[in-house]
Image (cartoon, rainbow, N blue to C red; front, top):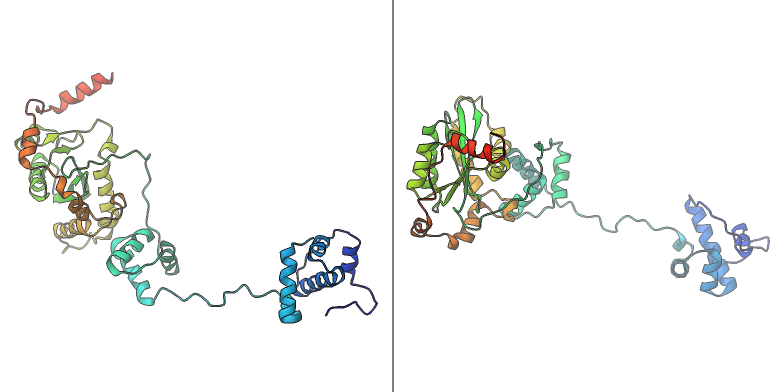
Length: 353
């Protein structure tokens, strides 16, 4: 066992402990740490009490217990700090093929790490955390997805029944190329079409496409105040199909937030990846493929990770029949709205006339 030094007395550190002097040591080396632990054990041999020794040395009883046990089992070697390195290094859980798949998904869809992680699990049965995906993107120095400036977050309301409200809008996506968009408030299913302008004829053609394409009858159409929607002929077709016209309040684009947001997604995940200089590019065919992907494959956080089509199948039983919609439609209340008159009434109501 450990004994006294050659001079017949304990080392200097031990003498300080016996005198009750409180001294703080910065033990920067392994040798200093070992000497301190030896002194604790020597004092314990003298006092024969773990409690008294721990109190005199200013350490926890459990600490002294630990070093006593290790000294008995391993001798002086047991007083050394053990490596904190794991006994078994974690295996690399991402293969080269998986890395390439992550990069391919990023190039193809312009997804962030969270959506890539979800896509891998859903379509490839590969479970990787968002942190792991992020590290792979960092490793390959992939530029981050550009984030658009966020507007004030407003509370959104979702209709529980497909077709109860469809938001409609138009945006310019190229020289003499306008994308008309309709999105169902409940399922997020969309209809997308391209036209060379945003005239009345284009809006009427698009309206017929929407009525024909959606797998449910439409009860309400919601638009902004654009003349392509806010006109007699457009509203007449709505009335013929028992669809209520619900323009949003002036200067309130956030009320059409779902269609606005979806068009922003188109710009970031579809148009940003198109080679617009390609003379052979078939814009309409490309958009049709994107529409199909958006509706049937793209996962939506607002739908709790479902696709719009999966959401539709989930709530399909709630869809009313066309006869029920016709019965609820009140012709007298759905009068044709004149745009200028509507604006004047709104301005008058808000003391702006």
